Amino acid sequence: MIKITLISFLFCLTLERFFSGWRLPQVPTWFFRVIAVNIVQLIIVLVAGYSWERWLASAHLFNLSAIMNAWFAGFTAYFIATFVFYWWHRLRHESNFFWKYFHQIHHSPQRLEVITSFYKHPLEMIFNSIIGSLLIYTILGLSLEAGAIYTLFTALGEFFYHTNIKTPQWIGYIFQRPEMHRIHHQYDYHKNNYGDFVFWDMIFGTYENPKTWSDRCGFTTQRELRLKEMLLFRDVHKIAILVFLLIPTLKANPSFASIQYPLQLEEVCSTAKGILKEGDLIFIDIPNFLFREVASSTQSWTSHVGIVFKNKTNQWVVYESKIPLSKQTPLCEFLKRSAKYRFEIRRYLDGLDKDELLKMKSVGQSLMGRFYNLGFNLDSDKLFCSKFVYMVYQSIGISIGKVQTFKELLDENSNHSLTLWRLWFLGHIPWDRRTVTPASQLLDSNFHTVLEFNESLAIKSIL
Image 1 (tube, rainbow, N blue to C red):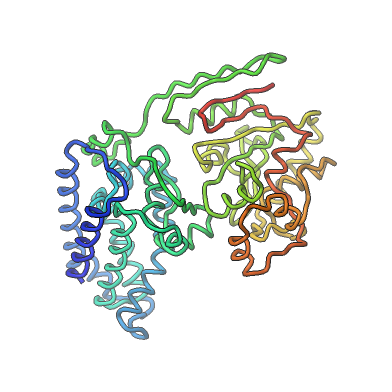
Image 2: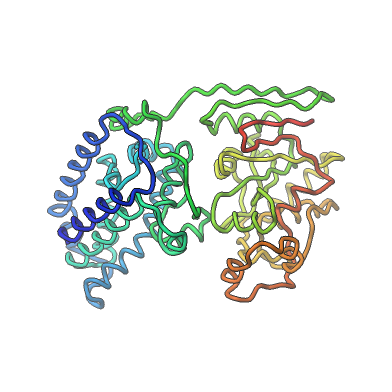
């Protein structure tokens, strides 16, 4: 297996030398750093093979190798592991603690190429190995031979999506491709596309498969070079950002404010908090496969909406329907999911009184914990984001958004391809099914925009 892994690595290395997908920046000490880190990782792999892998293989809950040959058992374990590691990977992004102590180093390089695959903190490599060993040996009961095949599959996956080559988009409907992983490593983004097999990202709302990619990866050069600090668990990505927001007084003219780039979530969130009122709608752009298709089908930038309220501790939260269950989401966490933190806040023109807000909050709370409806059926017991908003406002006699059938909706954008929707509904689009979209709620004339953070990194405030 070691020979196959080495040959695969050299093959990817050759591919990107002769068919380079993107021009990589010249970064000081890169080759010295990446070789040194990879040597450490190789030592960890060798130590693992002679220690905890053998110890953890001494007992097992199941015995997969008893009913499958080594190759099939290894691949089956790999597929199961992609689910486990999807969540472990996602945790390392969504938790500041796990980002700093485990994953920060891997995302620091500006050069994304095959040798970047195992440019990781030693602690991350050790934990990855232990988690994998617990799963495949202690739980699934793989033999050491099948375990080696599992390791081969994981290495091949890492090599492939880190390799600096361009690939056709269709690959990204099955397996993560280099363009997708470049989005994951993109400068000041670092999210989405957490799994090897893309099914998990599709199901859990983190899938993003661009036809092309033309941004940059990693941190700034100054931060990337602070390897010693990252090894000592220091967050080198914290930077001071000055935000200038001119919020006009009542009856003032619209004004614009600029935010220095790269953005910090805390500053964006603080800006939103400065203008929010309970009952406001907040629209965002979820940058993944299904939600982007929803936005494209409705000729809109937005693909998700929620309603803002304060919780018992006087903190801003967003009542929303999301995969898998409807919930109350802290405002900053909600904004974090939007592409480049883009959002728009809209408010009911006639205002909402105290009794109306209490009624809305009560109805919203009663809808918590309901499953998400991936069929976007307005008449189902399950929810989706715009239906959630529709039901909460309907409880006080306000109808928001345009209720229409799928036929009416898709006929409005007749140039849009129906291929994905046919696949989504297994060949039978429910033409007569009623639905309501975030796009129609964004354009509802009974509401007006009070704050818009747009793609040009400007804030438009309208009171």
